[in-house]
Amino acid sequence: MPRISRSLVTALSSLALAAAGLTVAAGTAHAQSCSQGYLPLPDPSCQPGDFNPDVTQSTIGSTICVSGWTATVRPSSSYTTALKKTQIVEYGYTDTSTSDYEEDHFVPLELGGAPKSALNLWPEPEYGTTTAANKDTVENKLKKAVCAGTVSLADAQDAIVTDWTTALSNLGLS
Image 1 (cartoon, rainbow, N blue to C red):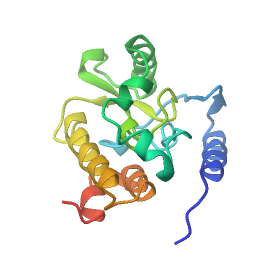
Image 2 (image 1 turned 135 degrees about the vertical axis):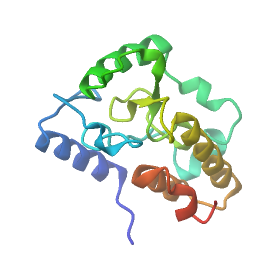
Image 3 (image 1 turned 135 degrees about the horizontal axis):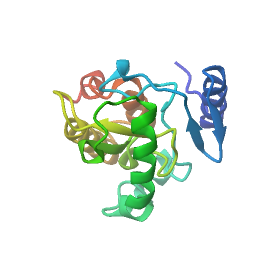
Image 4 (image 1 turned 120 degrees about the vertical axis):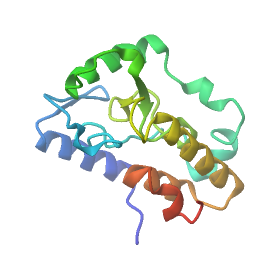
């Protein structure tokens, strides 16, 4: 199956967001409402995922595969907390305690996710049977596989965006 270019994915994502009644401005999406029906995944019309253009297969040796690299691109907690508060309302969560959610990168920084894009950040519940902690384990295994050369960056990113709960098994890593 041919790989779709990131610029085309970005353009298609913007078009899909517009069709869903969302506006895109300066890298953010604002929804009237996002559905909890996709949990443990984010609503794809609100957070389809977004990529850091500095992370490619050819740059992983100087980006994601360098210990501590994600700390150099991780947004401040003041930024993510403010976004989390807004998105908790957009998702219609009845529990509005920010401590019950992780403002999570759908495409993790460890796999080249866009650090500050609202298309890539969402309030992931810390409660339930499939939580942010479960996703962190998947992310770490995928990063190790990418850095070891057993899985391509594109395949790991596609697996996360498709469904992080099945990403490892779909790539033969579980």
